Image (cartoon, rainbow over all chains, first blue to last red; front, side, top):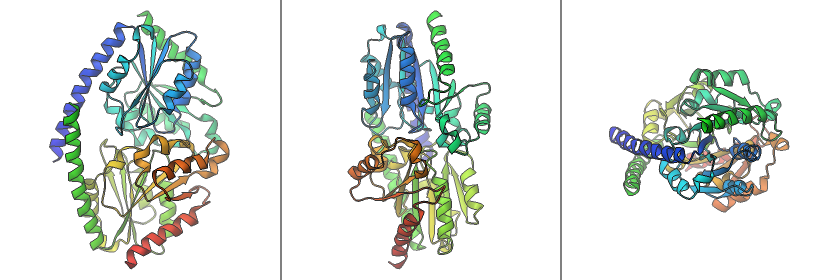
Amino acid sequence: MAPQRVEVVENILSANERLAQANRNLLDQTRTYAINFMASPGAGKTSVILRLVEALKPYYRIAGVDGDIATTLDSDRLAAMGIPAIQINTGGTCHLDAVMLQGALAKLNLEEVDVLIIENVGNLICPANFKLGNHLDILIASVPEGDDKPYKYPPMYRGVDAVVLNKIDLLPHFDFDVEYFRKGVEALNPGLAFFPLSAKTGEGLDTFIEWLREQIDAYHLD
Amino acid sequence: MAPQRVEVVENILSANERLAQANRNLLDQTRTYAINFMASPGAGKTSVILRLVEALKPYYRIAGVDGDIATTLDSDRLAAMGIPAIQINTGGTCHLDAVMLQGALAKLNLEEVDVLIIENVGNLICPANFKLGNHLDILIASVPEGDDKPYKYPPMYRGVDAVVLNKIDLLPHFDFDVEYFRKGVEALNPGLAFFPLSAKTGEGLDTFIEWLREQIDAYHLD
């Protein structure tokens, strides 16, 4: 049974890659820079994103796509900030895929969106295998998860463009060795951009937002 | 493409169910009570399990099976407690399945195991769909993940036999409404056993261990 299963997975992945490329082409036609945020459940994806929207809104036209297996809790919070927000309920699937993003893109007026923020399903394994067509991949880790996560979940930590370490205000309450964590990230992605911050207190946010604006502006000036 | 994909998934699941039943038969032949622990990454599965092993070791012969996508960090910690421990590296798959457990069972001398502790892959979505053949399913949640998780991840919270809420020593540092969390659990599993505790401080552990011993003893007396 095992070889057959592998073959099917490969077929799905290759169909997904083609659709991801189509999404990318569409985004590039409308000059929409798309950022995919991935994280474990409860790492604070939505809280970090709300901070970003607040900081970036004066400069760019922003829209959001939220992936969850159920509820519209996250997109409701984005919509409450006055930006167009599309919820994708995956019905149990542990990641977004290019078909789902294609459906969401069709519901947005991309001509009027400079930056598209995609919040993937809360999962530290599945999203690694499914490209969406976005321009930037960011992994949000958090202090309560523990400093061993890059070692235990290498596929998710490999191949992202930046790692955010959220909830650093909790460092005094955890045995979390930031250097050990960072070494694990570095082993998988030498020289990777790394941003320790707290979405709650705001500490470290400015550096991350500045870096993000550089990426967005480089794209739009290109 | 979608209907074809669904059909393949159903084939895999039905093959898995048959193997899970075979695992259960094997476990029952040797009177080995198997408990499957599931949780999000970083919820503290291993820490809770180490506490249990410590408490149960005087009364039962225990063995452990650890599922991770990479490393032997968790099984090393179990083995250090002097119990037989098998590591399953899933190679990227986001859950254990019945085939994987079958392979691990073959490596253990089950005649000499009263209680088998299975630590599933850290994931709040995938393990819900793959039965293993164990007798008891326990979900470990943790305070830092947030109180909305039963609402956002219903398939994992539905159908378990107990929910542990770990890291309650951190409640003062989080906006976590235990009643809201519990209501979400109750809506999916009316009357479910619920154990708030801290693997770190030991608070609440006794009640959970007492309940667990009741389940184990009921099985062995049956």
